[in-house]
Amino acid sequence: MALIVQKYGGTSVGTVEKIEAVARKVAAVRREGNQVIVVVSAMSGETNRLIGLADVIDTRPSTREMDVLLSTGEQVTIALLSIALHKLGLDARSYTGSQVHILTDSAYSKARIQDIDDARVRADLEAGCVVVVAGFQGVDEHGDITTLGRGGSDTTAVAMAAALKGDECQIFTDVDGVYTTDPRVEPKARRLDRITFEEMLEMASLGSKVLQIRAVEFAGKYNVPLRVLSSFEEGEGTLITFEDEGMEEAKISGIAFSRDEAKLTILGVPDQPGVAYSILGPISDSNIEVDMIVQNIAADDTTDFTFTVHRNEYPRALEILQETSQVLGAREVKGDDAIVKISLVGVGMRSHAGIASSMFEALAKEGINIRMISTSEIKISVVVDEKYLELSVRTLHEAFGLADDPAEQDA
Ligand code: ADP
Ligand code: ASP
Ligand code: MG
Image (cartoon, rainbow, N blue to C red; front, side):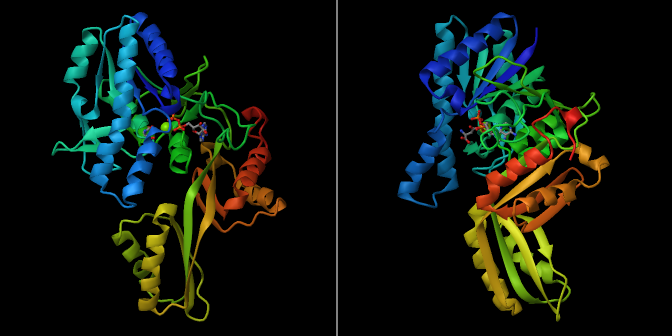
């Protein structure tokens, strides 16, 4: 007997019929003698609908009330799924995050899970009951409802699997696994049988929304076997593995991209010690996260400084930078929020030189101007104009032979 945690995302539970189909899949696993915990998202579009309702009233609503509002989406799905399981003759019980006691900090809209009280769930499982848990939500120490950030149901599932020592955490979604890049942008993308935690973490943090980054972090930390599968088709999906398990010898595993980018430049700043701190200090004091940073070599005692932030934070960051510019006596502040970040990811990069230049060459041949570059051991990211997103992804996918079998890749 195994303990299986399954998570079904929004599209997988988008209609009552789909919820009944999920119930049949769950029932089959339960009837094989396994214990089953099911984590579900809100029905597709529901979270966005709720955000839209609040937005009509106030464009900057209280984050506490937003969490109360958004958590209702998942509450609908858990009840409907339990009803569907009952109809199939199974014993099932639904729980909100607060009932299972998924304890989080109080950072509304992006809370972090601190602890899960597993007693109730364990008792239900032992009594043969299917436990249905609302994804994306928890409760803080004051009893207030919190949510875990967009895509947070993935994290609920992995956290439940970690807390209850599940044998596998299965993330069911609308694609049949993790691909070399988002198949919606590059139809030639290839499904990966396996990907390492390290690479998956990098892909998620660089914008691939197939798994929430915190879910991958959690799985890595607690050694949770994690698999991404299709809700609608049979198949093995993609296993997220720890390294050294006979990995495919690919240099590049995938291409991630993020549309949520904006860049800001301050020009003609007096070049003196402490300048980076004077520029970025006020930004970080406002809780704005900075991603890429470039400082030019100084010419005539002044320098230019460019950095990127999440596009949502762009207006605020621009305001702050304009104030800083006055204080420092800089020449000018410029900004651009029509940019995107595209990243090549692969642990194989460590042992292969020349990946960066192949990347730049491929983009140059298409006339795509690179605005910023950043590298780490297992990734290379470039910032390009938004209009080149699709072209860049497809160009790089082709240039690195990602549609082909890894053995045949050469670029
Ligand atoms: P769910 O609602 O089930 O959580 P999401 O929309 O959050 O589903 O995640 C699945 C989507 O992730 C896919 O439809 C796909 O467009 C997107 N995606 C982005 N990058 C990748 C990738 N590398 N592999 C597979 N899917 C990806
Ligand atoms: N319903 C939430 C969202 O749309 C959480 C999730 O689906 O994982 O982001
Ligand atoms: Mg998701």
